[in-house]
Image 1 (cartoon, helix red, strand yellow):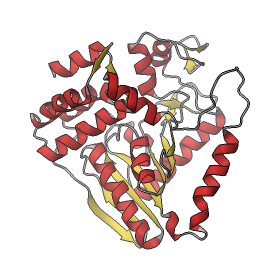
Image 2: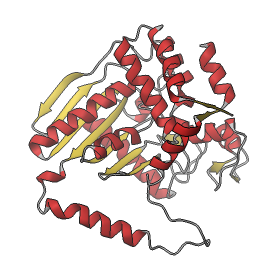
Image 3: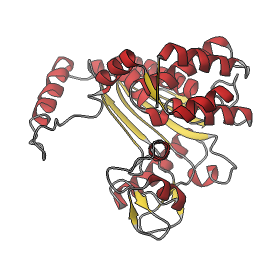
Image 4: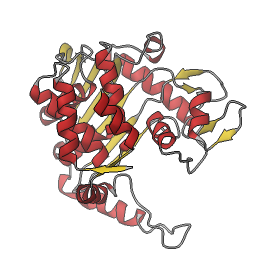
Length: 332
């Protein structure tokens, strides 16, 4: 493992992007989001993903100078075409558009078709929540998850993000598989087992070995049949709202590109009893934190609670990286 300062990594990523015809500001924005994801401790969807992103650019799956174009709009709902542009900048555009809509209507829904991997969905939830908005968003993917009771993959792991505003936003970012493919790949790189079974090996036995699960292609849906059902509904809703490609259509392509995504922002200032919202959040979290831990000395945390502490540590010590990943980036 290496630890490198964020500024060093950002400048390296910018150089790689600009050499591929990304204009300066777009290159900086994309590089900063990749690094911010790792800075906040989500290494599986941060810098670890950058080599694959460059590969998709080189193959023409991500178009550097593409940006969203409007397809349809009616009041608080808009449909946009991502034109196969970078998933990060397309997603930033979409969440910002949803926030603007919610300023006028109280809620804004931006559905985005024909876009690319947004890397870490929680990024956009945190952006909205830090600005005082409630956020709900999700994306579909290629088929990489079996339906409950099946052995072949027909569902996407379709990550879902929900965020509540605050000084330290409460953010859940979860794939519909028990562990995302990014997390499985991260654990494989580090030669680490999973803390809990995450899927099946090629013999059909439950496994904590990420390499075995990747080989079998049989991760477990979160909540078993419930996660499989939610995956199906998220795919249906993103396809309908974005007027975009579904998981079955995405899976007919050579690689995952042209996904459908939904970004919903709710403006709490438009709700009744606005001033009491912060008090309600505090009451709920305070009670949650009173949970009796199974193991003595363990702190029960809410989703996103440790983010600020992780950022502080990584700013002080440098961002941890697998040496092989950094070497791969430098070679690209």
